[in-house]
Length: 216
View 1 (cartoon, rainbow, N blue to C red):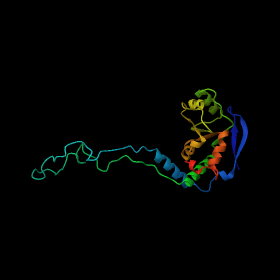
View 2 (tube, rainbow, N blue to C red):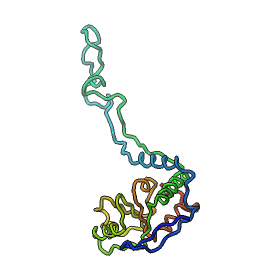
View 3 (cartoon, rainbow, N blue to C red):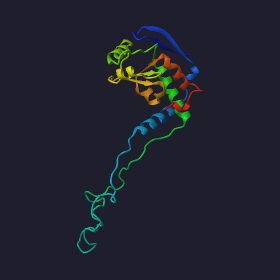
View 4 (cartoon, helix red, strand yellow):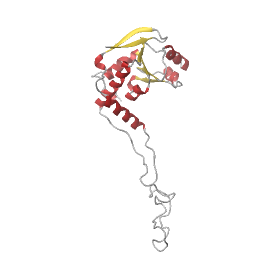
């Protein structure tokens, strides 16, 4: 059974939290993690690059000069790709890069990524996170008091306005509901800080009976 340290908002130790071993996986899932990250990054691509074909370039459709007798290369229209200002042959067109992976593979990837974070000691629990005012300084003091440095992902059961406003100006800290976190998030951030009331929902996503469709 793996244990996670539990601290309060001032950084004081409040005990440990036991994570059931059947929620963690280490013997498989490496390829699943790779597939999940590739799918996530592919989905984020805009796919908006576009060039005009010779049929879309503006210009006359008449033949610039006659076919034979002038000693020049033959040409049909000014819009041909060989000429400057003409169309583009085989250029990029708007498309979707999204990839689909099976729900079971996505869930396995999520479990493996979280398991590796736990094993590396990069996961910490916070007994509660109360932001009374929408001030960045309050959240910044909490993070610094915990001794956390580097990119940090804070997972909460649900977002409130004060927390949202307090976190938006922090470049190294991102706050998300547990339901929105995905495999790429777990790998991207050096530290994972979980508010204790959101741990039950996270365990539901990790467990066999959890919502497999929510693992991204």
